[in-house]
Image (cartoon, rainbow, N blue to C red):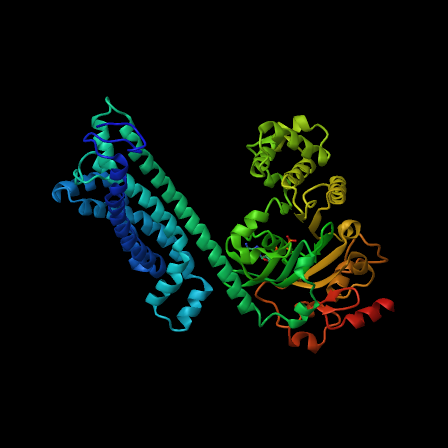
Length: 577
Ligand SMILES: Nc1ncnc2c1ncn2[C@@H]1O[C@H](COP(=O)(O)OP(=O)(O)OP(=O)(O)O)[C@@H](O)[C@H]1O
């Protein structure tokens, strides 16, 4: 009796000389079945009631939500103890009552997730096609909410196991069965003679509860990735009839570039297109300027490239290839692998990008830790090196400074240092100088240019400023109303633009020399969803003809550029004249 671990009894023996390992293994069945009973009731009540409340709304929602709120205020342990007394200690009754009392938590989560799916376009389409409400809930809604359900189920599984172990420990549930809790209860009676007996059930319970939590997260992530792949594939199939073959034929192979965007479509979740059929490439060490008026979709394109589209917006088709691998098809996991180490980002407002309650050192320390820089001394050394790389004069002092203690230009340098911490190969810079004063603007641009030359970084630069394109860009991608209308080497954009929109933007640029009044571009960019079916610029274009409004214009290859215009020849003649 009460032997410690040995070759014969790996986990020792108990108070009656029985092998603890055998009892622990036997105990899996009653312990797990107790937790499973509670879990089954939890899911059987929580999912259907949550879906009905979220999807149907109205009175059903009000009744279910109120009852759930009331039930949440009842302490489960008291009810479970009462059930044990009334049912004369029947484990099934006790665990089922725990399931009932836990279900309101699940109802709330499922309700919120189902309500979000209710307004999706595919649900409306299913309704329009005459699919029954029950079938929509089963096939569309349930599929979309499985992520939160898996997480809730794994968390509740852990709680149920602890409850079951606790009640068995107290001898309230079938004390003769060797559940892990009962083994622990028995161990507590001989704690003065042997403490070892507490360890096997204690460790088994702890590890199982932790494993359930990890399992839930892993299953949720895996299913999210599968969903992303399925959505991307479905969207690509849906988008393919709209994709002009002329566009595809004119585009090079993504594996030749560090970053390639191919036929990218981004929509709001209600189905309004924000950018359509966006394609361009970025070679290692190259700077590409993304230009266009406000509202043309430059920032949305940048965020989609980074896989960071804000809530209410989703990638509806196409691909973002990093080193030839499609990140959109790879889902969030693929983006996570590349963000920071492959793709860096600096935003318009450097102050907003820094957390005011953390010092510069703590910002850098955090990203360096994420990038696996081991010791804190190594991280500090690398942080100082990064600050020197972005030409911060007194890095030791700046490391200790808070964002409010530094200037805007310095904050942008720090943002760049943070972005460089993962040694990215592509840096996406969304109007990095807009919030800075003119003198600092040119310093930041020269810094970016210098970093690019010293580190071979490829730069995707979003800008309104043709001067910036002229100074540091190799190529320009001109966007108009969610479309790429021209892609050309920077020098030819200025000398021979191939799209009337580019020509009009350049003509209206105050930084370029003009004789007489500065020409303006009449009208404004049409809002998403209000784009005409043909050329989106036609209403503002001097060269527009009927043909421009008939059908969507593909990107047409000219000698040096790609242009979405039917009148590139006319434009060339005008320029010569
Ligand atoms: N979260 C959002 N929800 C719905 N529409 C949005 C959202 N964010 C942007 N849009 C719309 O998408 C279009 C493109 O916006 P985007 O910010 O990409 O333009 P932009 O070219 O970067 O403009 P700017 O130069 O002013 O930053 C705009 O019509 C904008 O109103």
